Amino acid sequence: MSSPVSHVLKRDARPPRGGYGFRDAVRMEWIKLRSLRSTFWALLLVVVSMVAIGVVTMANTKVPSADKAATFDPTNNVLAGVAVGQLLIGVLGVLVVTGEYSSGTIRSTLAAIPNRRLVLASKAVVYGGISLAVGEAVTFLTFFAGRAALGEGVPEPALGDPGVLRAVLLSGAYLGLIALLGIGIGAITRHTASAIAVLVAVTFVLPAVIGGASGTTVAKFFPTIIAGNSLAVSKPVADVLSPWVGFAVLCLYTLLVLGAGLRLLARRDA
Image 1 (cartoon, rainbow, N blue to C red):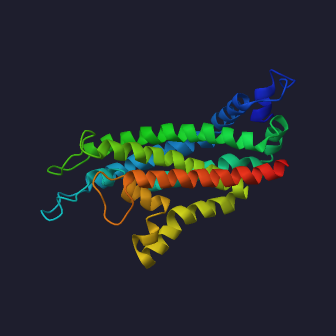
Image 2 (cartoon, rainbow, N blue to C red; image 1 turned 60 degrees about the vertical axis):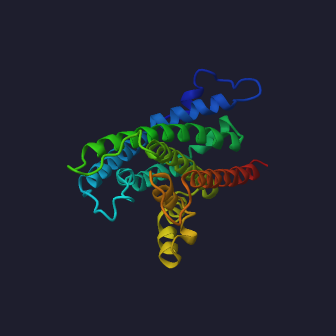
């Protein structure tokens, strides 16, 4: 059976003068991703799980008491499913890289495009773009579905309320950043199990352990805490990063991890 890369190259037996470029690499990655059933099912699971969690959470949200009304934030409740969505999207990001190494199809990819940095960049563009689009779509879908499930008397959030639209948009963008982190971690380790272990440790284990030991002093810099307490809120939360500072920190993490992956791959090119 021919690989997705060989399928792309069928029409042109000879590579173009100067080799295949970035557009060719992006086209190859797009065909590889859409040809894998796991891509569709994983992203569908992200949508279903996030919407289901948002609806269930909002259906069980009660009218806040008088002393809690000022801090009550239904927007944060409806976006609770981001915690599950990030894991699924991050793991798929890992597999975008490590899956080729475990199956051996990376040889076909590198035979066509020997520049590993170009290969990683194309993976980041294609899967990162898909994850961003899915992330934004599912956060808006979750918001409207969850809002419809609110019980009588519970304050209903609207996109026009202060901070609500920003919370929904940044939560969707967060999923795109987690996809890129998964790709970067996969490029660093090139091993599926270890990369997933690192991803789970950074997003779930370490924030819980460090948060339990020292509160938010250090834990507020971890992705999941930033997502839940900085990005997905319409009302400020004490002792955590502000939404835009938190988003900037996440962007910095993503650039550092992808940069480390690029450097390691570049050494293997030398």
